[in-house]
Image (cartoon, rainbow, N blue to C red; front, side, top):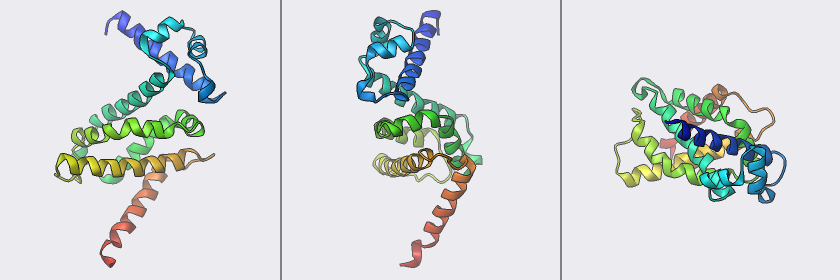
Length: 189
């Protein structure tokens, strides 16, 4: 990345930070591009070089955090992990984003992020070949990942909105216990 690209990337990060600062103070609908640019100490022109509007800026954050999660997963050797390890990693990653996630939840914007992350879920499935993954068709994978993403999203929403959320390790243990119980009752019909 050259100097100009680094500066453009830094400007985007400042604009995201400014948006989240403003979101912690006022409703999303009342925030203007001018406020975001001023809070970031950038010009409106700089804002518009990077984004069409504040929705585009928020969408950028959603895609960027999803991409960071994907890149982080690619650093793991999935064949050596157990499912609980991946759950712990999932909760640890989102724990680092908890302040921003809490703001999105409070503003009613968290579901927007789900819409950006869900299409990435099948890509995550492909680049992270865990031993428990099925060898299914792209359609099966898409449905499985949509199902899993929706469930995880609801768990994140319930978990991070609390005043004192459980630790990531505790969340992984809770989910593992529940999933094991579900698996044990599968043949009880």
